[in-house]
Length: 326
Ligand SMILES: Nc1ncnc2c1ncn2[C@@H]1O[C@H](COP(=O)(O)OP(=O)(O)OP(=O)(O)O)[C@@H](O)[C@H]1O
Ligand SMILES: [Mg+2]
Image 1 (tube, rainbow, N blue to C red):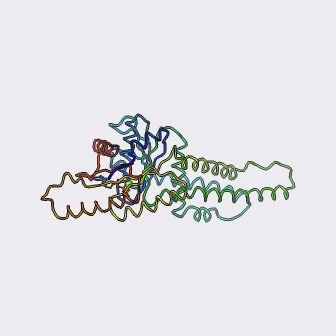
Image 2 (cartoon, protein in one colour):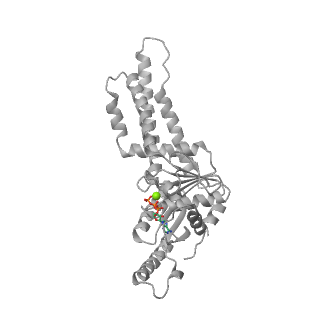
Image 3 (tube, rainbow, N blue to C red):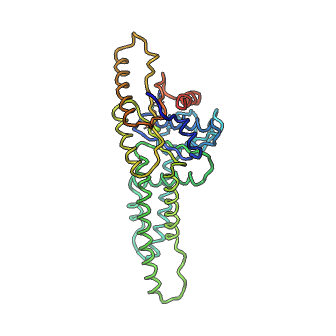
């Protein structure tokens, strides 16, 4: 397959690229490709953070180094830090914050209900956990401590939904603020005392929240700054998954950086006496490579071979990066 624009060429054309994401079906090599891309950025001299929101301890395993809970310099790769985000801690922190807001609000509105019920219903769902992780991610982006961020996105918490959520948030916050304003003026009207309305932490929080979401959306839809890459194998299901992703992303105006085809069997290494199942697999991959070429015309950025072993440890990750950026 001829590659119209390689990953290196794409990066040359996007010198300000800062936020990159890797998506695709489970098990296709998202973590490995995110790692290899991060190595590539670091080797181009850019201070790079490789971050994973995946609850499974994937980065530490791949790097053979503990990077859980805090950005940690990756041994053997200058300019590279890796950070496996503590999902549980993030969610707990978010719950605690919500709890404080709800407690305050109930007191403010003079509603004598147990706050626990509200808190339960607000936090006991997967959407809350995803949104907590999303907020954590944009916090990392806003801190602006690195030149490039590479996010290894979990397969279930797909990025499209996360970004779609920023619009939903915005609507929700607007609605909340409207009701808050109405409640406040009513209170002021009914109030006999002239004492000025106390500071309203919920309102402040909502305003701040809306602003942050808006800012995140601006960054994540800017094609100079952001690119989503999709990893596939030359197989039917992974192709179907990224086809859907790419369509969604186009609809949402989120910049697609391209497609990485992983685990392609190197034909030059197959002798005439290769086992039949190997030959069959190669024939199958050939067919799907054609599908990829037709469907993702001009979007394929690199083709990475299937290695003899899994990708583990920094030296092998560097080798993978070399193939990815070839
Ligand atoms: N080109 C390759 N050659 C050989 N092994 C590979 C290659 N790419 C990835 N692997 C291996 O395949 C397995 C899956 O890769 P990885 O964990 O990166 O997938 P993933 O898409 O992140 O999975 P998940 O959806 O579970 O997060 C790992 O053991 C990895 O080392
Ligand atoms: Mg992974």
